[in-house]
Amino acid sequence: MAGLDGIRKKTEPPAPIDADLYELKGRAKQGIKNTPGSLGEVLTALEKDHAFLLEGDVFTADVIETWVDMKRTKDLPAVNLRPHPYEFFLYYDA
Image (tube, rainbow, N blue to C red):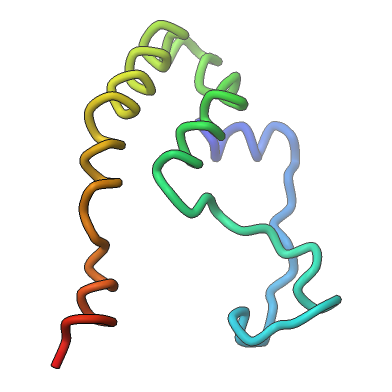
């Protein structure tokens, strides 16, 4: 549905960037959008913008609300309690 939404709105992807995004500083970094950095941020973004999922009767508002609620009450606390695998690499890898 997100892809169809982009086609309908004629959303153009940004121009490719031929640089290491982690090394960009100052003005070069401005205007580059990032994806959400956590499950909580993803759920907040979905709550703010999900109208495209309601088109074509693919999902209902109740389904989206129930799914977000389930993720916030069951998955999010579990994810927040545990370290990310990269943290193991950083701190416990020999």
